[in-house]
Image (cartoon, rainbow, N blue to C red; front, side, top):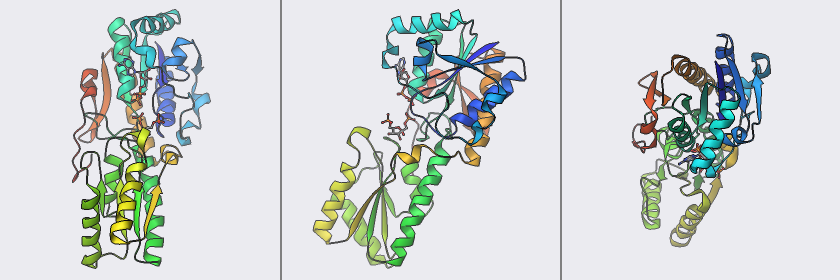
Length: 319
Ligand SMILES: Nc1ncnc2c1ncn2[C@@H]1O[C@H](COP(=O)(O)OP(=O)(O)O)[C@@H](O)[C@H]1O
Ligand SMILES: O=P(O)(O)OC[C@H]1O[C@](O)(COP(=O)(O)O)[C@@H](O)[C@@H]1O
């Protein structure tokens, strides 16, 4: 089989290890992997390279994506979908594996509904861990570990010079998985989430309660990014309120975009291998219109239509 692969939408650590495993696993079965660059844009421009195991031999330890990613909003138009199908057909591509988030899966669904013979399979890749039906998305653990390092540093200075309040905003868009994990792990006191908003007054009251409990010499409050166009402002607004009303020393911190890259952790590499195997197996066996999920300790297939539901957030048990 000729199998195309793309990385699309937001990049995440874990994409490269997954690409490497797809190439190795499929090539050893006699298939050929076409790596298209910059997501769907590379298919439009017929910009690809045939990937052999020797080309990907050190990709397991690389963040970002060697294929680059891309956004092509015009793929919503049928004319562009037809163009992509014709580009793939010209190269005798039998199947396409899409590494990305739910947006990329919408693109995959659009292409496979135009050409049902082209088997298209999704692999959930996003640091936000917010793909419906999957307890894990590639990149989440690497991003989480960056957050752990970041908060451990804050804890050191918090202990050394008591009395301060630290506000920390993470990536994660509208979903609280990254942000709230720090509370579950005991590294932060509470979080302000899109799923669980708090007024500035409520935030102040909570801080007073923690300080009066005597349990902590410093307070850490996590902020979910929310709408990435208006990031930071929510946290700074709350910080100004707390400073003005309580007279406390509040320090604002942004984990920022370094959280999205970096060397993939062991967990991301391990899951990448599982997702890769199941994605290749699906296209080889002709299992249509699915994405691979990790749930209840095993890899499974879900109908791609399911992917567009919102994953339910449970503040006590993140998975
Ligand atoms: N409704 C849609 N129809 C067709 N293609 C889509 C659709 N939504 C998203 N895409 C394609 O998927 C790409 C990536 O989507 P995006 O939401 O940016 O990232 P992610 O896959 O990380 O969620 C878009 O740039 C576009 O090419
Ligand atoms: O780089 P962009 O396009 O501004 O995207 C920012 C968003 O990407 C993410 O890092 C991951 O988003 P996706 O993987 O779902 O695309 C979010 O945490 C963040 O809000």
